[in-house]
Length: 141
Image (tube, rainbow, N blue to C red; front, top):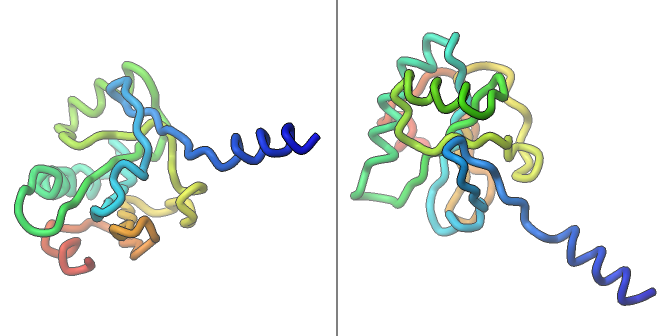
């Protein structure tokens, strides 16, 4: 009985893998030690479209604080539909198919765009509502 309970606990504590639009998988713990931005967007959201180039800049940035940008489609699209939309919108950062909000522990995005900032320690740092620039995001770190 003890062994069965131990197996259940071990299974429950296992960190989930998140599906990425390109077919790969990732764990948020792989990014620990870095700032992580999780941006919620939709194709019908004009401010989201305007914000994408700013997020691409942060994603490509090599100097300064290490930072990873991840996207989550607000409409929870999957498969080829999501891949085509990512290409159409010029998104250069990974887009998660699975929403990490429940596991990370922040409220679901209700306004778009929403950008969640996770600290290098893996804790919720800040939630930014509305369109951001690279400068406003960096100022929030």
